[in-house]
Length: 295
Image (cartoon, rainbow, N blue to C red):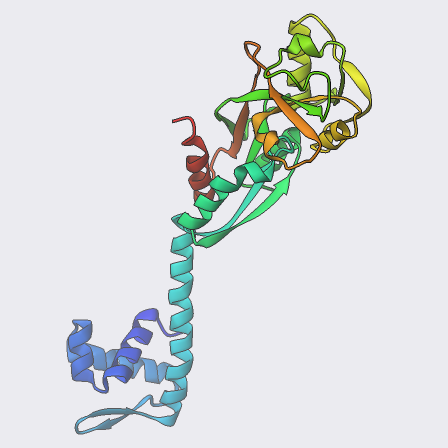
């Protein structure tokens, strides 16, 4: 099998049309270059060049071989460049997960910046529950996740990077008797039905809201229809109850809603990045963009 050095020597001689200019370009002695080409021809079993008084000329077999080798050389160069871009975090696919309470619409500024800074990269975006994101990232099914705290599931194969806190808001249907207030406190919601539901094996937004109600001395009333997804806002629009949501969720464009901020101490939601112990370069780059909000 010809070595890469022999192939490079061969292509240089073919491009420059002689051993003398090729030897000068390669910074080697002409006899050494001639020996390398002779060894290559012996290994291939055919002549690559016709030796002429004023240089060399490719044989028909040499021309075909040059074309094939040049294609391989270009492929190797492209592979090296693409590999370098991937290693430097300039190319590849970022498998990004997000919680339903961190809507994709609220991430568009960060995603746009990431794509602008890494024009050869792309994102595979998926909405996954926070608890499941932990295992997906730990098992290598995703590169990075954006979860809603608290999470009950922990894994030694991931790390958590907390993001900036968000204020909590109350989503009310249009015309609700509390919609005339500029701000609300959690105690104002004691008699209201909540359309969010706590999963006994998960943390997240619903658990956060329930804990906030408990600290105010009441257990939230459960609406007749509940959900743990962003579709809770549709239930609010339908007049089935109210919901307490992070500020990010107020970016969801749903007609028939009124949002009012909560002013209680500690009425804030937290989120975090979940990353493997050895993240990809793309994951590190996206994490840097996200964490600049709290730097």
